[in-house]
Image 1: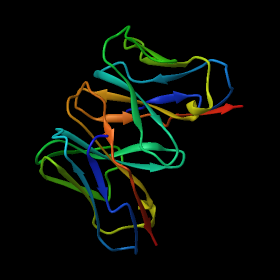
Image 2: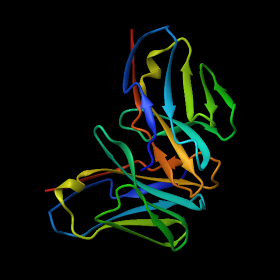
Image 3: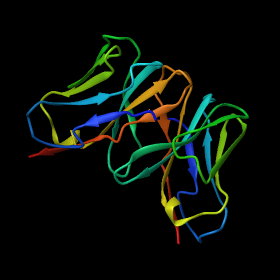
Length: 111
Length: 112
């Protein structure tokens, strides 16, 4: 069974603070790692697509790193804002084209 | 927004009846996926397709079948719906393996 694990499951962060969370995945048969942002009552939207070991991606205050050899990726949010409240999903893409999602980290920004 | 449309958006059906959900895309994407979303489980892969008439099972495929007779449509069928199949169903597509996936709006299915 293929497991993509995300931690923590839920996180409360004070507005203005920075935070990070983890996605771990099998290091074999790796093709790509995606991060998605999922707001309530909407559909998930892609943040990053990462394919190479050592990849670092950045979009505004959000960034991500990738370690394919040890099977983990970190998502960082700098200076959290209320609009950052959402569920953050990572997805592991295997060589056979399956996209397997983790259960997500639910982020709550406290005013 | 990517042109991915799910229909119906909401459906209530009785146990034992067949149900078909449709995912239609206008992006000419090769890959299409069906997921179900349940509390505490995130998105779980039901079936996926990597081309016309090419489909394969995901993590939770029991009780579901799919068909893809043309690039733009991916149908998910519950042959005999059960209450455990009450869920929100999402379709996703992507064009290349190293590109992001795009999601439909979701279909809320209730089996009573």
